[in-house]
Amino acid sequence: MTFEIVGKGVSNSVKLKPNMISIGKYGACFSNDATKLFSGYEYCEVYLDKENNRIAFKPSNNNITGFKISEDKGQSRKSVTGRWARTLISGRYVFASKNGLLIVNDCMKQEDEELQLLIDEAEIDD
Image (cartoon, rainbow, N blue to C red; front, side):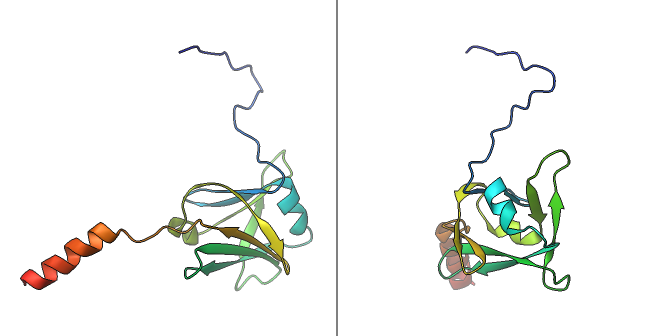
């Protein structure tokens, strides 16, 4: 294994490609292309589609239904956080833009079928 020195002021993080969203356990970070769609908006509405295994983000100025959009200091990227992120698989995803929504497919966590079988067996034994 070879080590490389990291210089001061040099970020070792991987930059997002223009058409990507990074999803983590606390929320989502949008690439610069996605950020442009949020220009002029302070909030983001989040829509989960469990049936089709996808999530959608919609720019909004509604503080009741929307999550506050945060802007990374010194960068033009924006992010949004919330408990909804716990239902998603962390990673970088390509998004599709349709009807004002940023749509990410195949990012929802699936229920553990093996765990469900154990639960069912325990109920039968009772």
